[in-house]
Length: 111
Image (cartoon, rainbow, N blue to C red):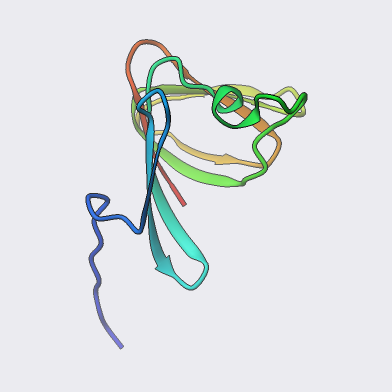
């Protein structure tokens, strides 16, 4: 059985916009599955957006993502640290922090 479908991040199922102008567009692609495009502005950090007021808070999500542009730094709870750059595919387990590196927005596709 063949088929094809098309969705656009320009018409997402949900759009989240942060106070700093960072945004995430979310598209539901199947039962319980989604794909996201995040545009994180220079200076963006996971902790400032989601973890403030929660000492020791880290991102509880697992990510599989491709960096489209910009750079993002990850620090995991076990001390592993890396910087994702354009063209990189990353698998990131729960228990991490992230922040944009440099003066260019970081664009990532995540599923």
